[in-house]
Amino acid sequence: MSSLNNSRPFPSNEEDAIVPKKIIREGWLLLILAAIQFTHIMDFVIMMPLGPQLMRIFSISPKEFGFLVSAYTFSAAISGFISTLFIDKFDRRNALMSLYLGFILGTFCCAIAPNYELLLVARVVAGAFGGVIGALVFAIIGDAIPEHRRGSATGKVMSAFSVASIAGIPVGLYLASQLNWHAPFFLLTGLSFLVLIVAFLVLPPMKGHLTNAVKSNPLAVVGEILRNKNLLWALTLMVMLTLAGFTVVPFISPYLVSNVGFAEAELAYMYMFGGLATVVTSQITGRLADKYGKQRVFIYTAIFSIIPILLLTNLKPAPHFLILLVTTTFFIGFGARFVPAVTLITSSVTPKLRGSFMSFNSSIQQLASGSAAFLSGLIIQKTANGTLVHFNTIGIIASVATLLCIYIIRQLKVVS
Image (cartoon, rainbow, N blue to C red; front, side, top):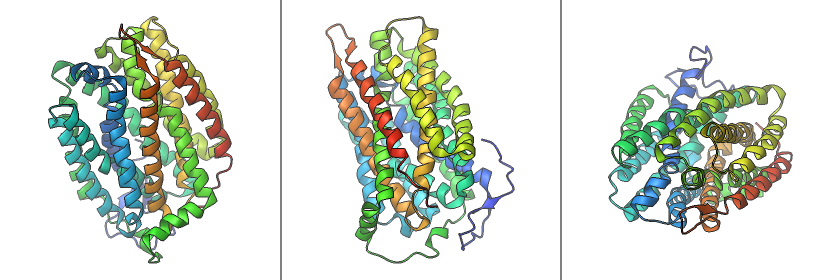
């Protein structure tokens, strides 16, 4: 995380009339948001590399594993829709702290779950809180950071995914292989609790969005979102972008183990190299998006991302360094296209609706993620010898969705 000594205090948006009594530098704000983002992303993505182990221990099929991934996202979608009705009525800090505490409790339930059924329930609890956290993080960025620096700020916070890949997933996989699959969730629970304490002590009140707020029927807010053509394009972009990624991501680990010859312990190298690359490229993409335009940078990165999608979903046994080159390139494309897309989506809505819209958008994203994982689970089949088939079909679906994103993003307009 760069610019921790940034001289700009939060909030830096000149439209915020209520200045908090406690002042926090912009760099520190982004660092705390990135830490929160890291833990809740880690909770979601750790399920995917644990796939081979969970499928073996619980004797479940790809369809059942896909449902285990989808349970989190479907729960997050429902809670996001509900939060849309009231999230903009609260201080952003108080809302974030409450949701984060609920997320920690859900993660702890995952850690102590003794079987598949109770793990499924625990994933629902974690998703109910975790899904809204991401929306609130980006709403805070939209409130606090001016549009001309928002791409860079978004890239920094989204690099949390990369850090999770570099450090979190390899450590989680190591603990799972040396102890058991419960261990990564115990570690994440403890780490999240430490982040909660720091955030509680450091973050100031965040009430700028309430300055000119007008009381309205909560359902009217949803109606206002659905009647806004620009916001409908933003929601459609998120659906297609999610479909382009999460049809592929949940089954990378099982495919590499079953079809390509990777050992479960070697999956850590894939996430480590992918994370090391994207922690740099995501921030570079954010700066390029601010300099050359979000739409233009998205189009180039989206076209580039199709190449590793098709290569990855058609992989055959090969030297590990070639496999890691393909997977690393996939993660670079995956992260690079998300940065300008999320920046444009955040900027497509006015401040008074931003929290509600980002919650609504997060729900759509989670619903799309769950549907994508479930769709993949239906298409991918396990043969008698344990290999997975039809992953190449998933690659075609993801590529077509990526091309549709290029058309959709050209319709999106920046309004704040």
